[in-house]
Image (cartoon, rainbow, N blue to C red; front, top):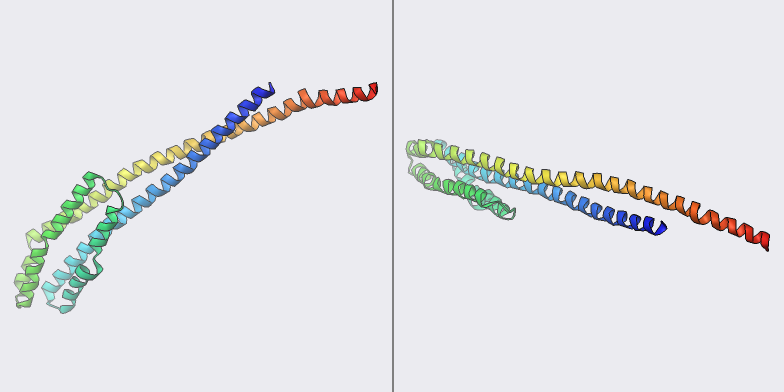
Length: 218
């Protein structure tokens, strides 16, 4: 009986250790997925911010002809480079092939605005603000900007939904491991109690009785 109890206790302890390891693995996985979700959202918004900064600067330059807006455009394009930074960050975050397809479409549309922006700036340099305004406020430019914004919104939601599912899986695994570990701990505590009770009742008490009887015999 003691051998069986000891074996059951060892099995419970081994299962408890495995469940504890799985619990911490699921915790780490949940934290990583949460971080991944935050990073992807941040970089996608940063890419949109870079595109929006260029659009705002070139439109302001087309309307006012002020040099400061031209400098702001060049600052974003050549120094800040928010779009390049965001792209590099997204490459490190393991987007799916479908998500990269959408992102490449966004990049293609954004790059397609460059000729219109350059034409607008050339028109401003020539003193033709009307033509510059037509370039960056025309139907083609407006529709492209709107499409970029809509695609970015849908991509952010798609990435968040995908990562939310993975986070839920990790959270479910974490919860299951925690419940099973608790049940295993209760069982192991019961096994320990049983072992102590068995040792007192079946081993210690008889030994004490024999010891007392041996004293009498002596």
